[in-house]
Image (cartoon, rainbow, N blue to C red):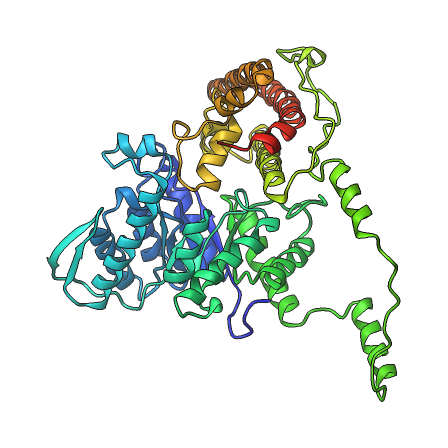
Length: 536
């Protein structure tokens, strides 16, 4: 449960689309007047379709009055810390003390290098982050800045201006060392639900707590923020239902994982209003006054019965043969389960025959540790994120067809999704693993498929097939993008425009068939190899 003295916060995570800057500003103003606490933007200076984050945050800050502004998170390798400290302090003055600074150690290294930045190893990335935080805080303290680090050197810089308030530092951390650094140095942790599902929060929170305690801090000094995504509707999954469903689920996350702030990734005005006006107040109420459940009431009733007893009655215990239990556990089926595929296909135009794929027989006996099982489970978690993105693509195309979203907006959203940015020829799992689990490896640093080939020659046909399917997926995504471009010429032009919209729907149906078929197959076939051989 979050510290009772810490008020829950709610914010929005907007896309800095360079083609829609006025719309982004309008959404930020809406978040401000709707009573949200934070508006944040991602920072990818090498992304051609993104406006500069700091410039856009400045415009947002001058058009709003109460909401705090934050990069989510700053691309540190392309923002030298002494300059970043001055930028943040200046914006803090302009906004009357409404700046918070999210920091990331770096990702997408090819883009960073293309923009003139360094290419760093995971260790170097964390080392540089630690050095940068020291420089930032020296600058904001008003004392002369001196640093002689491996990555940053500052020789007697006179700082200025001073910020209007003590700027909090968030860290977007996923790897064990980064999490401990977060506990030691940061004011807040800001993971994203697409990368870290709720099931991963306890172990990551524990590492942050370890870092805090070792540094002589109280763990609750570090706020736990959470970038979330979802859609309002009638679904039964996490953040897929009504505002009331969202409120219950977020209250549970706050209670179980000490989350003190939720930041919704959306560019939809209606979603922002609903989140601000219905979800946020309901979550605050549920956390402040949790409902009494039937189990709670039973406990209350029983406690009154037990009053006056010297000792509680000892519960009866069944006799357990631990040797038998251990033997059964060694032979049980994998606790990790592939996400079910219902087999429904919308187009009948798959590039492959699903019944002709190579398979790898499962070992007859296995006894995997929790660490081993974490590898295939992460594969499934990443795939579930891609499935959620697929649902969003389908919703976006539906909005284009109904005229609620422009083609330009649709392309911008789709092209920033994980499925579009992955290098599918090397594997979506590898891309996600390298970026998320280790934090900042590139595909060139770690490639899961070559490792599996080296580990077991029987896997070669499977690896060939998966790489072929990745290439097909890349082509299907390109086809979808071309269909979006074609709609531009047909918008508002009668039957020809309708024909182009029909073609667009066909391409999104083909993506649905192709992606769901592939993800299910990859999960089924890689569960045992990943558990057996790991990632390196």
